[in-house]
Amino acid sequence: MSTIVCPRCAKQHSVDVAKLPDKNSVFARCKSCSHRFPVNVEQLRRIDRSARPGLSQSDTPARKLCVTLSKGGVGKTTTAVNLAAGLALAGNKVLLVDTDTQGQSAYALGVHPPAGLTELLTGELTAEEALVSARNNLWLLGGGRSLAGAKRVIDRKSFGAEWTLSEAMADLENKFDYVILDTSPGWDQLTVNVLFYATELVLPVALEVMPLHGLSEFMQSLHSIQTYREVSLNYLLPTFLDSRANQSRQIHNQLVRLYGDIICDPVRHDEAFTRCPSFGKTIFEFAPGSRGAHDYQMLVNRVERGTPQSVGCPANVTPICGAA
Ligand SMILES: Nc1ncnc2c1ncn2[C@@H]1O[C@H](COP(=O)(O)OP(=O)(O)O)[C@@H](O)[C@H]1O
Ligand SMILES: [Mg+2]
Image (cartoon, rainbow, N blue to C red; front, side, top):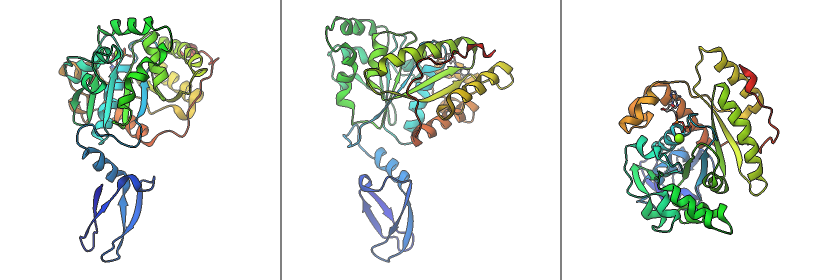
């Protein structure tokens, strides 16, 4: 429940936010003075969500976005951390899940989780016991070296191994607005598990030649997953845009031609990104006025709006590595 106040007579009205229409704003009529006034529904939803104590159950399942690409160094962790932080700042309840043995998400947020995804996957802890609070509205299920043990647990399964993560996460499904998953470079059984769990994909593509090889390779692996379940590529995020470099601009233009609507506004090259993890700060905390903060805010806005378009997976995607 939330409260709205009539701007004319100041009468307070309780409203059930869950029952409001799925629009950004509606008109309300005051029962006391009959004044008709606009109500910002989106803002009400945010206030309602941030007023929820701890991790309460909601009716809507979380949107599950996985930030992935087989190639390392393309900005996956930077994107996962800052997208999660930005969505949390906007009033959403967000869980960031680090599925990488490097455990960089915890480092980037300046937290030291005593346990994490490993303990959840091995059954030593329940989902709620395994996560830690990282910021207001933001929780972390940490990764790290111990995930090697969790991968062995998955390997030993003779049946349904690819659903291990989905089964372990089931209890958390309705406690968050968003689950953001950071993945490791390469393609292993944990990545496959993430792709069987997530429903939306965010692919950061560094605007350099080599990572574009990674993109076409990844598309082919994704195609094999899509034979078994529906997962769509919704956001292709160009990273490391250097608008002074010809190659960077050319590759960006080519991506726009090939992928059209799913291309997000690019994240520009910004030195602040290399410095903020060592302070345990997100880009919004470390350099709020920077272009990096601006660019990730654009991504946050776009994700919140949702994308009408998504791409299945062009199996024979034309390698666009010759862009240089
Ligand atoms: N837009 C950017 N501009 C400059 N440096 C960046 C940018 N995005 C990420 N970085 C830096 O590049 C390195 C690799 O990024 P990271 O997110 O760890 O990639 P991945 O998770 O794909 O391996 C990190 O040092 C990070 O701070
Ligand atoms: Mg990473």
